[in-house]
Length: 247
Image: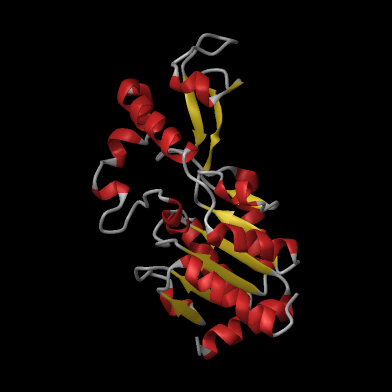
């Protein structure tokens, strides 16, 4: 692949050794999981307002529970893909400082990434709707009550109508302002406030790279833009870094 832009990105990553990777649902489609806003995405098939809101959780728990139980099952059967594995390798080599993710599937952790800011929570966490006591996926799926107070259980994800976790958001803002390279992988960049992070990084002087199948509203900020598959893109990037000695 003769891509001068890719060579420049590889050089920037190897030179700064302070890359932030920002991932969205497109990162996990290569693991067989659905995204949300593409032509065949989940929210074009189902209405998120009926399934993934605090109102749905409180007002129609049966439908809410069925939806997230199905998501638990799909994610339990998925495995990290090449993209997840290369991101984790980059971190282990000191090229990537952290992963900021909108995903709730836990695949970055499963691939070996260590510093992960989960903006939308994780399906690997379950808690009581009433008292907040932690529980398990199995108890949620089986509709067992909270062992502490008897309340209903919910997944530890951010629903529509809820705020992002303060610590993860603050850490993500800080990382975006301090990085040398900000790399977007598989995000439509349509969800605020997280979609402002590429702009924050750009304004602070970072080199911005975006890999996404569809156009995003932040493409105008990108120093490098590609619609390659994420696994293909990261494999090519890794080869360029290795060829340039970015170990």
